[in-house]
Structure formats: C-alpha cells, structure tokens
Length: 123
Image 1 (cartoon, rainbow, N blue to C red):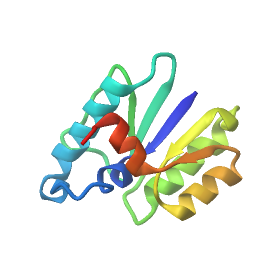
Image 2 (image 1 turned 135 degrees about the horizontal axis):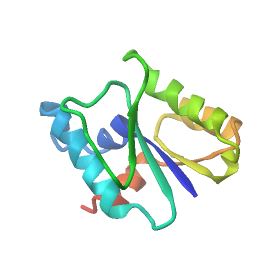
Image 3 (image 1 turned 90 degrees about the vertical axis):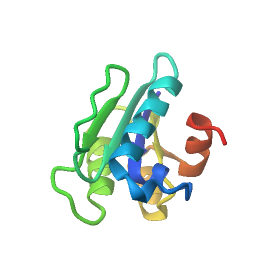
Image 4 (image 1 turned 180 degrees about the vertical axis):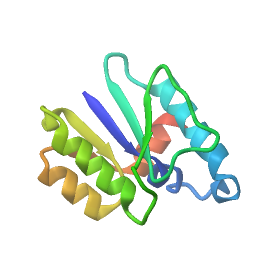
C-alpha cells in the first residue's frame, strides 16, 4: 500500500497552536509519520512549499508542490496519483472534500486527515 499525505491538512486537523511555528509542525509531522509508517508501505507527505529548513527522512518521502500557491499541494497529490501505475493501492490522507473526490476519481481511496493524525500522534 502507498500513502500520500496532505501534510498541512493533517497538521491543521488539530488546533494545537501549529500555526505559531509551521516549520516545527512540519518536522513534527514527519517524525510521527516515520515512527508510524507500516512496514512495507510507502509514505509520501506533500507540502505546498518546501520546508525550511529542509526535512530529510530515510523512512518516508517528503516533497512539495513545484510552486507554492493555493491548492498547489492538492494538485501535486493528484499529479502523483495520475502517474502511479496502481492508484487503487494508494490511500490519500486529507479532509479536503474536493481533493478526496479527485483522489477517488483517479482510482485511489481517501482517508480522513484527523483519523491519520490520531493514528500517528495519539491524543
């Protein structure tokens, strides 16, 4: 199975003050995803802009949209889905209804961002 995570959507699913330090919130999410990543599964987290400082991971793929703009991470996620040879094996973690619909139209399934956040970072 392959997971594509709408990074800021998952971060924003919990009002824990993440907006005060977006870079730290992004780094924290990557750390949680690394510890959670199911063995044998591929996990990719997509952000709208590159994390600063850059986030490196040997466990998951950290990527971003080619240019930062509204919905650019969504467009990048759909681009990744359309390029995938087996989109039925992909789960997109997002609570964005439009992105979830686009993911399903591409053959993937959608998983609520808040549920993934609770899996990777239990309350």
